[in-house]
Every structure is written in C-alpha cells, then in structure tokens.
Image (cartoon, rainbow, N blue to C red; front, side, top):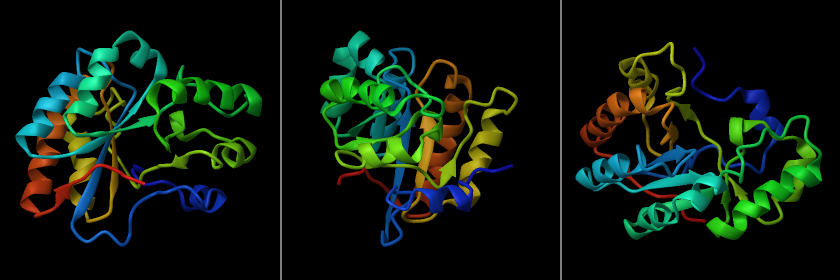
Length: 203
C-alpha cells in the first residue's frame, strides 16, 4: 500500500515541495477539497483542541459557495492554498485551460501555495505555475478518500511514519468524512505523544 509518493514523480518535479527536511519539531497537516460546512467546522474545532495549525488547500467553487467558512479558516489562524477552481486533472488538459482554472481560484483564495488535484499535472503546466505559486505536495497520504478502508486503517497509514518535517494529506470533504472523523483524532493524539507541533505552511 503506497502512502508515499513514487521517487520517479519527485524527480520529474524537483521544484515541488514534498516535505521540509530541515524542520526539527514541526509537522504539517494539510486538508484538501474544502471548505465544506458538513466537515470543515469539525476539523477546525478539533485542531483548536490540540492547539494545532494546518493548511487548507481549497477548491475555488467551495470558496464561492461558502465564503464565510473560508474566512473562518483564516480567522482561526490556519493557512490556505489553491486547489484549483473546479478540481481539474491536469493530465490531458491544455496547459492554458488548466492554468486558467487555477488562476480563477487564485483570485479568490489569494495564496502563493498550490496543490494540483490528484497530483495529476504535466511538466509544461508545472513550469507555468511555478512562476507564481509554490507547489506543495506531500510525503504521507492518509488515503481517507478510499471507501474500502476503515478510519483506523487510514490512521495507520499515517501514525507509524510520523516525523518532523512531514506533510500529511487529509481531505475535509463529505466523501472522506467517515474516515476523517475516525483517523484525524488518532493522528493528532499520536503527534502530541511524539512531542511534535502542528504548523501551517508559510512560504
């Protein structure tokens, strides 16, 4: 079961950020696909309970639908990033069309952080976007989107591998919420036990 990105992908995109190897005490929780009122407020409250900060890679359409919730994420002290306007897959799309979708979201989200949906982005698309965004990837994937997994299994995709500098992916979406609601408290408790600090990404 692969929870870490293949090495060949990392070599194809050397400017992308996959983790923070110089970090000594921080770990970086990230949440994709929100904000959603059915899920994101629960995540925010749980993060507050653990005095944890995180980075939310938001879909532009959801920011448009739930602007007050988007502002609440920022008000609680978390970072936000661009996860495209309509959650597009770069593979098979013309570069101009792909970049346009990202930039529409960029006008709403106003962040220099970007994460390509599905990690499906082509070299030409990456080259253009690198001029104005820092591409944030991950080195630990919870796989909370996989409905064949239990929440405990998703937590186990994360907890044994936790170390300073890691970037961990969860999703504050309706689809992922059954697994997220189980896995995230377990992961936050494990991070606390390891004496690590959940930080937001700032570049």
